[in-house]
Amino acid sequence: MFLKRCFAVLLATLSVAIAATLKDSVFQAKVKQGLRLVKTSEADPGSWVTDEQKITNYTGKCLHFIDITDIKDPDVLKRLNGQTPANDARVAAIVYPAVSHQTEANGLIAQLNTSGPQSWLKTLSDFYNRYYKSTYGTQSGTWLFNQVKSIASTNPSIVVSQFTHSYAQPSIIARIPGTSPNTVIVSAHFDSTGGSATARGPGAVDNASGCVVIMEALRVLAATGYTPRNTMEFHFYSGEEAGLLGSADIFRNYRSTGKNVLAVVNTDMAGYSPSGKISSYNDYSDIGLLSFVRRVITAYIGPYTTDTCGYGCSDHASAYSNGFPAAYVCDEPDKTSTPYIHSPNDAYSTVSFSTVLRHAKFTMAFLIEANYL
Image (cartoon, rainbow, N blue to C red):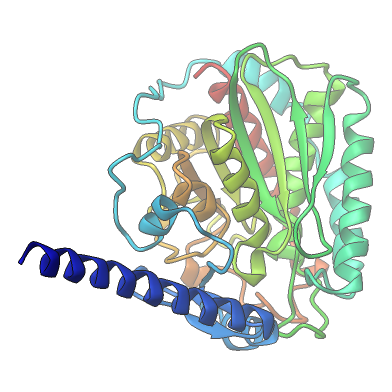
């Protein structure tokens, strides 16, 4: 009887191992065929699609998704499935205080303007597109890297680097070193699409506007020689329109290296606002950070709008799924946002630079207030 039980256990173990091996073999075969596994919701087990299908069938139709092909961490996958891992790494002990540094922040806010943003946004939107696998996407990334380096050059302590991926369009990180081991991040993606891999995609509002917002905040901090307590990072992600690829790689790295991130605030679209308000989205955000963001908006800008953006709508989802406190700001609720998204009509002429400046003011205010977390 004992031998029979041992044999049964061994057979069951072998069956599980064989099934796992077969499943992995099928997975690798799909990858070799050039397919990618994408999820559109927590309940969705995923579908295998081509890169072009990601854009034409999902992004071009404003259907949010996350490319999970390269995500192996079981805890991250649990979060992406709507589950809370037993060893959730999110920093629950962070205290987000009342707004209390207006004098310092307002002195820096007064130095923001739209001169640089207008020039930078024009150049970004003049690229035929910034699709992450196109030559234009690589060229735009090179231009942006050099421009961010130029902006940061007034402060030699700022480090600007490229974060390389499995595809040709690197992400960009500008880092102002602080005196503590903690990091605060503001972010925006710089890739774009016009609805297909080959379409004209100026991506002026989505998301050149978000890029120039954080570039302008960086410009003022660099020019004033600002030395923060918490390290400040400015992230420019590639591959967002293809399933949050760039941000997923970066936050996978930050998770594996144990980086202590206190806050990530992502800006995706900051140039079209009939309401004249900043919109703070509710979902896939940490409640403590979200409340802090709204206190900052109220104190420095005024009333805000709210909405939910859904599964995988922008890069804050990568930070959130990797266990970091994340929040998302935008220029409008979804129903009143730019009608030109993911099309050749998302042009420079549709951008409101008073909206860009409003978001730059918020970004600066957030960075200064978060510097004291």
